[in-house]
Length: 125
Image (cartoon, rainbow, N blue to C red):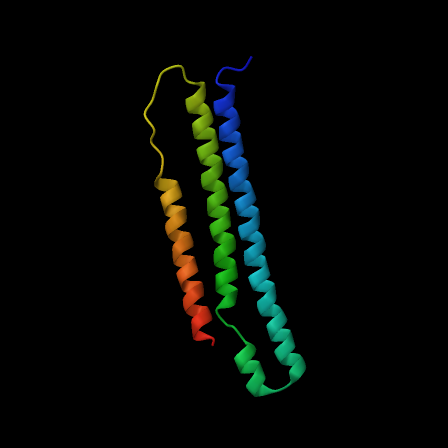
């Protein structure tokens, strides 16, 4: 029998939830990047300068890359947190909880990214 099995299983489930979130963020960043490429191709296919300027989204390249970079950062933090929790679960003595900063940093970055995306989308209308 593994001591504290339910705690280890909860730690692994949390890590896997972060992995799913990272995969979704990377897919979303990739989608934004490719959608911008699609709009550029569509503007080129139309051959009208007035439509091509309204369809181009010059900042979407940076937004897509930023979301993928945020996903990579989230994966690094999730992996660090998983192994840190695992190491702490294997200890026999009781230690105080010392977490929360990584999650707060990711939440602040996601909020900032969402605000930038909102400003960009409202400026394109």
